[in-house]
Image (tube, rainbow, N blue to C red; front, side, top):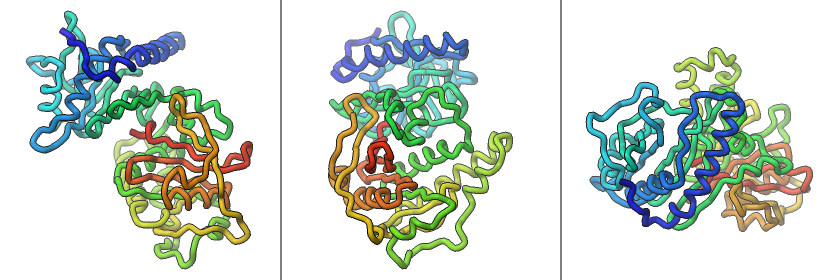
Length: 380
């Protein structure tokens, strides 16, 4: 049977989550989509969150669980790994199983029968709009689902950290001058391919955040070198000629990009580039994804004013844009990135903090100021 939850956030968020999935599934059915996941009711959502939250606070042989749960029957799981004996969904079972399924892309299958929830096995294949709950660190849970079109990072619905609940606000896509990377992360209907430039930028952002050291990535126009005016000389790690490993892969057509070996090569190049952002200073790439430099120090361009305000927002409920001084967004790394975009208005800056925060800086022509979008809730 499903026991009453003791994690208050689970009880508060469950009805909202059910309503969101119900709306997505109804819209997909109206469009004739198939391979749709079952609707997770509020009491099921609450029970899964509750058991997973308490499991995340436990340790098995000194390690905290890193686990992903998916709500679906085995029949919708492609070629699942089925346990001979199913197990009840509770913190103890999740903690014991976690070491064997912590690799990315593996989900514990959860289903309901006779009023109770049980674990039936594991799967790497899930249907569209399947309820997924991920744990990456103690007390940090992310509710998400698989995108309905092609490849792409799962779409996040909500993030729970202790007693804090952040519901993703999809209406952020209606904001003027919404950066393409944010639009792609929020737009459920956006077509996504391995070699889409925005999709690759998302992969780089996820990898930057994952190395945990913090870093800055500057994306500058391919056709001009004006960005050099905002970089202190000499550049310690300048690349000459520019490194085109990632750029050449992205120039291949989508038929080639569907091959497993190509996808493996792309992932390797993304990890290579994102790893360089851990070096002190900024990593600089062109809009064609050619690596130009890393470890670069950002300075104010000659004749430009110091930035004294920007528009800051987060794509969550209650995260509407407010105007503030850039120093309030973060430390020196954030301030220098904001100054760079203030001076080089056709560039984009991605900043990862050591505490896990991730911010995109772009110039808003409509607001005539730098805009900072904090998107770590979408990258988890």
